[in-house]
Length: 356
Image (tube, rainbow, N blue to C red; front, side, top):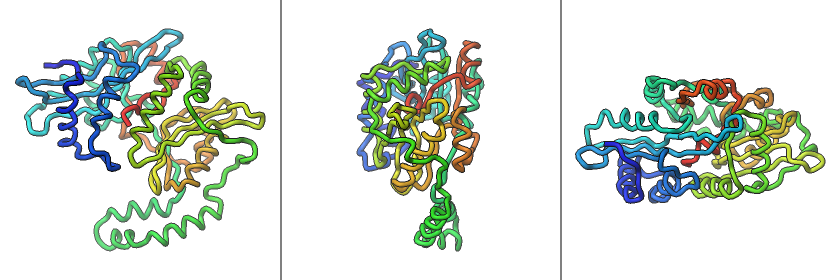
């Protein structure tokens, strides 16, 4: 039996989460605050497109979290469903829980469903349904290594034997090597820092930047200042051991030319949630973002590929990977499918990565 997720289910779902995934990182006691906020109490909760429970013999045996976001497609209001956090009861034999839960998603009234975190098994499930396919461009991720020697050391320390043992002891040497690379120009930018200024980011300053970017695309999110502030507050609350950083980039005359928002992980891999640049200012925004991430001590930084940003990302020594985690779409609207696949859409991890 499939039914909607309700507030009364939260304790049981939190308990299942802890048994399936273990305690969350960063010292949080349990994600019980995240489940209501992300799936029930957010500004876009829609009883027609909501999280679902799979029951077997009257007991909860599976869960699929589904968020919904309002979008515009060529001036027409649409809904996208964003599935997250599928799990099934580890102590019960429920091999078809995922199929039933995903069918409930596929049969929903939303115009399109999108996931940004599918493994190969999940990808196969999506592709079995009519209209399910890989969303190609966002399935390509870029990564910028600020400290490549340290990146190599972290890979080697996972190996067994002498190589792994030596890598665990090589931290001082790798940081010295990375300092030499930095002095040799590894992290240098062709953009003059004096051509731009960086100012704090909040919902009021970010909203018009998002709206201008949305006007250039057939598909784009719809925010108000209140709903955008809710997103920023939610991300701030879900940061765990990370630090949420954001900035508005302004040109010589003080006019905003772009923005960025990312999770900084001290001495680790930081993640971009959103990056926007006015046409002609892509290099400036990328340079400002990379400068802040490096100065904060990030080992590397990664994000989703965006078409107009590609030349600037290549110029900044980014490398690119395709594959897991896959971005997937499911829609029966052929016009909407074509718009998404030709990258005529502005959808960032601010929309897709709402869980954390």
